Amino acid sequence: MTALSTKKSSTIDMMTNISPAVRFTLMALAFALPGCTVGPDYQRPADHAPDHFLARDGLQHRQGKPPAAALDTWWHGFNDPQLTRLLVEHLFATLSST
Image 1: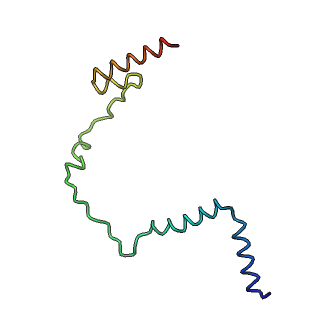
Image 2: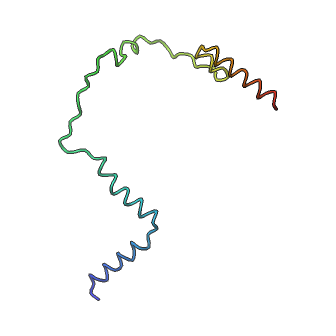
Image 3: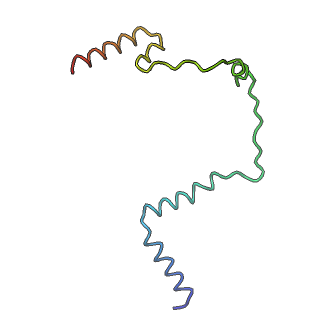
C-alpha cells in the first residue's frame, strides 16, 4: 500500500466511525450555513415607512411605564362580561370540586 492509499483508507475508516446523528448534523450545517451568507454586492434596502407608522411622536411624548395588569384578574383588561362570567364559573367549579 502506498502512503496515499493508507491516508485515504484511514479517512474512510474515520468517517464510518461517526454516528449517524453526528453525520446528519454535519451535513445539515454544511448545507444550511451557506444560506446565511450575503453576496459581496449586498445593499440594504431603503426604509420607506412613513413616520406615523414608526410611532416616533408617541414615543417622544410618553411618560413613564404603563401599569402592569394584575395577573390574578387578567381577563378584566378585555372588558368582556361573557369572558368574566365564564372564568368566574370555571374558577368556582374548580374550587368546589376539590
